[in-house]
Length: 299
Image (cartoon, rainbow, N blue to C red; front, top):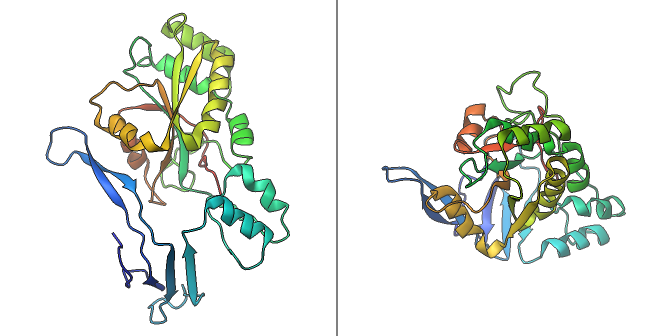
């Protein structure tokens, strides 16, 4: 946890002003000696972080190529985006741009959009133990996959800045299944499978998502309603309740209050084998845009 300036293994740069540290909580999975995970509680930051070039860095070919980098944490995302689109030099780079802001950037005479593949995958975590519905039946889970129109989700939910997936393994990872294709959008087959699995009449499917993914969740809900001809109830988890919701999901002590959770999974490894990704979702099933490329919002 970086809570003061210093070299801190920053490679081509050294932190000379400010800090950015994580405060975590432990979530217990079971009573074993090490079955727990860290959950990010918050990330305290100073108003400014300053990185200065480390001219003694051993890899001169890598850099540094800038003398000084200043991160301004006292500027909101909306204000920073407005400054980068309407002024010269106030803000040079804004990261994590929302797809709905893409047009504002492309229309600007000052800004340029740089789109790169992210290591973020949009998944639907299926609660196979949900009370009163057959989500333990593979036919029901397959029905959910077939009901989602991935092309529409990418086009309307992410302004085209995403890719369909063939599984949980992104296209840049080692060992993704060669030739595997995404689930097609097949409402008729989805409806047949769900009926075969015995979905109870009148029971709505409970869909949950955090605030940042509400738009994507509502697009998925529309697909499920139209394809499966069942009701879908969408619950949006407020940001202030997100940590408690994460505890409930990980610790599995209380019954989960959803049938499907729309979740953005992120991994720091750029070349993760399939086993790593499936380990993260070992007790759940998912639907994902299925192709050999990652479903990602891009900056």
